[in-house]
Structure formats: structure tokens, C-alpha cells
Length: 330
Ligand SMILES: NC(=O)c1ccc[n+]([C@@H]2O[C@H](COP(=O)([O-])OP(=O)(O)OC[C@H]3O[C@@H](n4cnc5c(N)ncnc54)[C@H](O)[C@@H]3O)[C@@H](O)[C@H]2O)c1
Image (cartoon, rainbow, N blue to C red):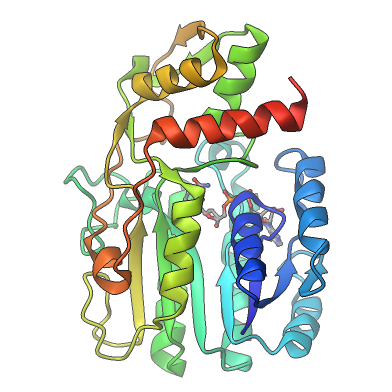
């Protein structure tokens, strides 16, 4: 099969592409190498993928429709997995326009291409952040997502809506994933695990928001990739019956999480254990746009694929810290 994956120099796209190549697929990867975080890390990820002859790398922004059209015509993909986005909850307060450009215009271009090339399965990344002000736990795909708390969440909610309309109008089998705090080796420098590990190893304080009274459903990246690979094989049908299915299109939304929220302070303890360093805690208030807890109902994922993420945080954090130490030689 030929997969077109966007965001392959990014954390999740890199892991997914690596797995697809190992499984014998062809992968066309597109990434604009944005400067949101260390571009060298993105280049190192892409360089590893380029070692495979079945990986075809392209570096441009998705807003560039002409380049995207050429790449799609060349690849003729069976499946498209759209992961490229301006990610991050807090940065969307600082630089909202980046979210509009990448997540709305970029996503629109991708779904237009999906229509044009009549792709067999379009898959796109949404986020647990769409649950916004919803406090009914665990978050189920059928729950209300009408109250996003950040522009990031709002653009992801729009991603789901745009994809649904195209699935309806053009019968494009479409799966929108809602990812819950993904972590693991080659992870993002803007995320808590990276920052906490870096600071703990350097003896610098870590900022602990909401005085540590936060719970997150942390999802190990290998589990997430396993879930995507399995979902790719079962495109939704018109009569899709899962919790996130649509009455009007071959479309579904699926939570991908661990379904086991972990207290932030326990997460920090796992980092301390893996690094062998005591973290200096700088307790702070709640950040604007943040939510106190996330918790995925993963019964739809399990019903569709027979799989549910299950890597414990202690194992996943140790894998990350091992990678961090070898990458930074510390
Ligand atoms: N990591 C998580 O915990 C998490 C949680 C929920 C949702 N998500 C979603 O999963 C997807 C992947 O996230 P990630 O953690 O790998 O992020 P990432 O930032 O590491 O990867 C995204 C990649 O997309 C590229 N990109 C951004 N805008 C682009 C554009 N307009 N054109 C071309 N390339 C562009 C970036 O250069 C980057 O390499 C994103 O859609 C994100 O919103 C991630």
C-alpha cells in the first residue's frame, strides 16, 4: 500500500512512517519543517526515514496547493494520514494565526486532495482538547464538543467538521482520531515530559501547573501507532455504528488514549525515578486554556480494532529518558 503522511518530520508522523516502512509499505512524507520547535530534531527524524528507499520526502507547507497537487499525483496514495498541524495548547494564545494557516487552510488543502485523488481512506488528527469545557468523564466520542477553550481546539474541531462534510458529499471514508497526550522517544521539546526531563537533569526547577492538581491520560507513542495502523485497515462504512460514527457519511471519530488518567505528581515521580534526579518543583496556578483532567473512553477503538493502548507510564517514561540521554549524550 502507498501511504501519504503529512507531518513526517514531527513526533507522531515520524513514528508512524517508521512503522509503515517496517511493515513493507511505501510512504510519501510531507513536512514544512516549521520553526515552532528545534528544526534540527525534525531534520534528524526525516534523515532517519530517508534511509529507507520506500520513503519519499517532500519539504513544503501544506498551504502550497500546487506542490501538494504534484506530490499527490506522483504518489497516488491508497491512504492519507494527515498529522501535520500547528500543535500545542499554550502557543495558540501567543500565535493564533499559525493555527488558522496550518490547521484550517492546510487541512482544507489535504481534504481537497483526498477528494481529487479518490483516496481509499482519509485519516486526520484531532485532539482530546476538543472536549474543552466538558467535564463528564471518561470523554466519549458522542459527548458534547461545542465548547473549545483554545483556538487550537477550535481549529481541530473545525478539522473534524470539514472532513465530515467532504466524507458526506464525496463518500470519502474518513477517520478522525482524537489523541490524548502522546509521549515517547523523539518527543516534542514543548511538551511536559521533555521539559521536565531536561530541567531535572540540569538541576533547574520545573513549572508544575495548577499546583500539581492535574490528571492526564498519557498515551505511549507505540500504542498510538498500533491503533492507527489497525484503524487504517478498517475504513468506516456508510452505516458505521461506532460511538463516533455518522448517520450521514462513511465517517467516524475515534479516541486514542490509555484510558487511565495519571496524576501529574505521579508522572513527575516516574521522571525522577527514570532520571535518578529529584525535580525542583515550582508550583504555579492553572494556565489559560488548560483543563484539569483528560480521560479517554477507548471502547470504540477496542470494538473496531480489538486493541487498546496499555503501556504504563513507568515503562514509557523510562523509554523516553533513555532516548533523551542518548540523543543529548547526557
Ligand atoms: N503529541 C500529542 O500529544 C498530540 C495530542 C493531540 C493531538 N495531536 C495532533 O497530532 C498531530 C501530530 O502531532 P505531533 O505531536 O507529532 O506534532 P509535531 O509538531 O511534532 O508534528 C507536526 C509536524 O507538522 C509540520 N507542520 C506544521 N504545520 C505545517 C504545515 N502547514 N505544512 C506542512 N507541515 C506542517 C511541522 O513541521 C511538524 O514537523 C498534530 O495534528 C497534533 O495536533 C498531538
